Image (cartoon, rainbow, N blue to C red):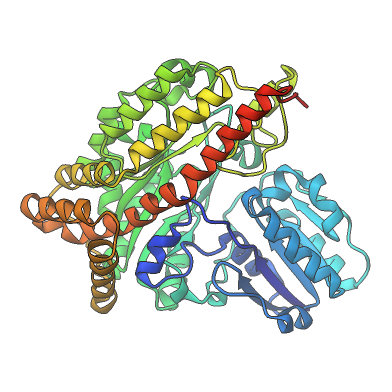
Length: 516
């Protein structure tokens, strides 16, 4: 059997870091770990190929080669996903779709696939492969009845990747999160009981990564790395030994809840094991909004102090923020802007609240008659529900917030704050000298000479060289990240938000938006 795994293209987003990747000579940020995991579950005598459209275009000969096409994708990849499915079906191929969209909106995919797989693949892969091998029609939908344990999972098929195209590679140790945030779809798909692989399994996956020749940053794509702190500490002890044995070939980053800052033992164990940064969901400094969204874990800590503490112990912090909660008003958004501006968080991912499919938030808004449409994954469009705050005021305040945060001088001020908080000992990973040199030269040329914000760039580097000369490698790394955040905000986000504001004003003059 010949299986072609296809990963749809992403539109340009904050998360994609497209402008920064160009400076580094890379084509994509991360590989499609879900498809690599599914590929590892297929029978060993089946032939498998992978095409990630974020790395290269799909050749017609690849579809011709395949017996069946496997697709996975997120809401934001919807257009590319449907285009690939249509192309494969037009060629007479069996199309199977799984992944995030299939988990939350399977009914929307059924017209475009021979089989939609909802849930985690481990339980269903045998049924699917058996039906494919027989050559008969597939069931239109396969739905997992439980959430499997992860102890028997094989290593993902990293050998299918064009490794040099990616800035980072990824592994997964656990699934699930113990918290109950109203807006989150993770707990709906993977549950609130964290399930983990064994430390030996994860080390085996790192061995597989090492065998590809890759050296660099590795993302632990867990929903919450510290969802089970006891298990995480056991992992980190083993991971530290593996990293020492292999002379620290990787630098790790992960997603975690902010209560990570409460455990010095956990912080220090992460740094010793090779972690240098973490993404946390802060969402808002508003206690009212945190309460309404069931984000109770963030109410138990001083958020500013927690972020500073993580930085001081050696973990850079990037974070997610949300505006548009029921309790938000213009003053709340201004407090949010001031909070982020005074933080040591250069990369603050701020989005308007969206009622994602299948979440508690969507169910509540449906009961209240406030839903307008299902979320499309659009990051900077109008909210998909009737907000309590006037929509035009919300969009205008949000636009002003992003314009302020990603003004070049403001971004670099937050980076300098990070550099000055970090401990003197920095990460032990040394990138190949030719790659590091390319990144530095590219940054200087494109940001310092040709860039529109070159004045702010040189003032930033001058301060970094004067105050934190031992952290210049990190200074260049964060400067390169800023290339995308600054440019994308100015070139894409602000114009799109202005268009959304104008649409909302026009509609308000008419009849307004009607709830679904």
